Image 1 (cartoon, rainbow, N blue to C red):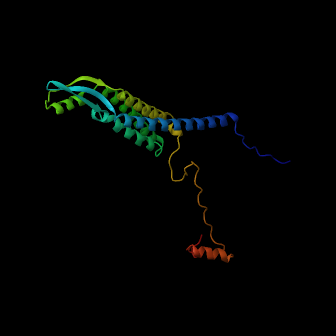
Image 2 (image 1 turned 180 degrees about the vertical axis):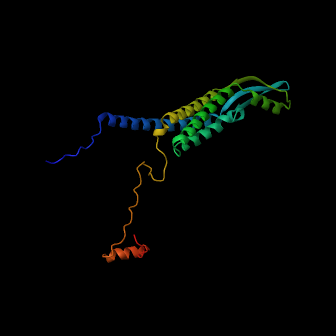
Image 3 (image 1 turned 135 degrees about the vertical axis):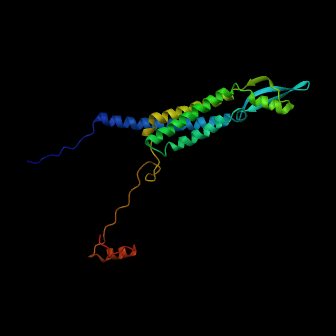
Length: 219
């Protein structure tokens, strides 16, 4: 009487859980990349726009002045660059290092958002311009107003923060860049190990000599 070997059959729940994890990994990866790249772009672009406007008293009149985000504070743009670098570095590291980089990504977004929000109430950049324009070091800006660009910049920082939080939560499921993998994520085929030439097959000996192999060395 013959014996039938038992072949393990994947359980439907296990297969469904694996498929769900893979789908969740892809969605979180796409969302993290989109949020991080979009947030950094928004911060960099909005930082170059006019954030504050006002007037400086000159003689019997007044001179309109304005300051862009870089003049108010260069911190959001600098942190956006750090965030972009961290977003790329997330895929170059693994395990604990990935958590550290993901934390840096989240902190850069938080810092960019907070500094931009505080910049919406800052008048020092325009006060400095007023002093330079009038030649009076005690001159200050009048009729100070701020545009919506600091808040747009803060929103960009929030997007970077969300990308960092996604990386902290799902980063362990994301792929890692490696020389053994192609762009589509499939492993590169390993080269087959060369076998010793068969002494009874002259063609094998000739091929081995062409490759420069030492035929006197024992396999």
